[in-house]
Image (cartoon, rainbow, N blue to C red; front, side):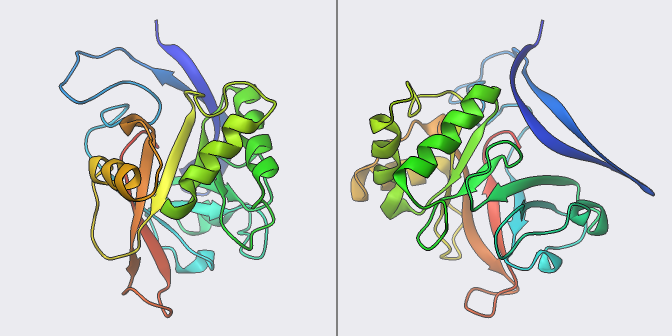
Length: 224
């Protein structure tokens, strides 16, 4: 029997129809493979191999027909029908305000409204209460602070919540592996993350790196 491990807001897109619904994320036991697990963030869970996806401050710059993370609030908020307008194959939402009920990821970086220890803890606690994954976008220099914030929270076991996964930007034009990110975080940033919790790496921009880039590109390691 598949085990339900979380709920996420997803979009089903058919010609002329956009349907928003809550979908259960299920864990299906498969034959074991070396280096692969079946936890929510791990490689080999629900699919084979990495997938590229995009995000952008202007949602119209996201490549049509791609997979994308869209802002649900803040200055860069996309309209609810953006997934349909862009004919996205996969779509999820990012919050800058800590909206745990409708956003599957939080953009936890300086100058965002949610950039406080308490706001991060509240977001993860809220996602945990829903049984949903909490994807945290955070630069490498802030991962140790994020972990400390979750450890210090009055809510229990946030830092070790199985649905907590990490989206790490490097934006250097090199496609990192999850193992390389894990080693770099431990060696250079005093942050120890289990390999299976490193969900994605934002590594590139299109059409080129730099201030005039239109969209960011990420490699997905785990389940979408």
